[in-house]
Image 1 (cartoon, rainbow, N blue to C red):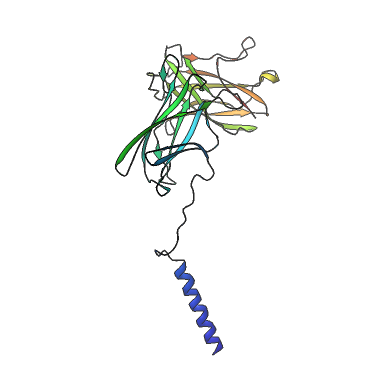
Image 2 (tube, helix red, strand yellow; image 1 turned 180 degrees about the horizontal axis):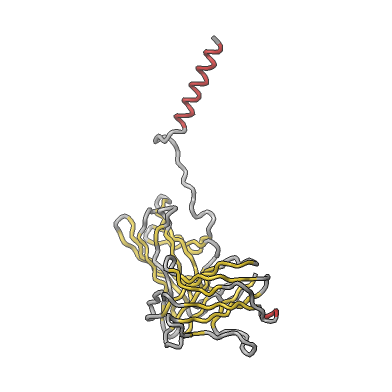
Length: 287
């Protein structure tokens, strides 16, 4: 009899646990914060909403490539809108003119439908008299809203150049930005860059099917180079330029570059020789 009672108790407890772990309406659901490991770089409040801008590795906006994640929060209940339709327009207000910069569209991420992702490439930092702002236009629940907020854009803390704005020999202004490597190693690193041309003060379309040659050097170590580098060529799948960067030791490296058009004509940059130790087109890194 005791055995029968014990079996019955175990059965009831098991049924109870099964009921508690079911997907019924009484089960509390906790949503994991998809941005828990990201840095909040701007929080703009307007229209009863908060537009939250995040970066994975940066604590603010810097010159060069900035990957940015955006969420729209309903301040009334602290919930986030799913699949918001968001566009943005960054503008640099200079003393004599205004201009924009290269940017992507914002698209909803695959992992979470409340998060939109894109990039902005700032060519220059702000200062006491000149500043960047960004206009965000977004639609939620069938309504469209717009807001403009001043943002602080600074040079990278390490002072290294990762973006270059220049005039080519074809009289076209280009913007070339390094995307990878973010964390260089003593190894052959995957390298990625993005190339744009200035079509107007507000339009910077991607440039396809050019070539960026690569000659990394260590100026403090006799300007030696490294083996197994590969020039950057256009990758249509990612709309960027891909190559290989060989770093044989830690320290300061100048990545000497040349930009070639589709017919191989040099638009900017020079070869490294005994007489010419650096190209006028370059990136820098130190690790």
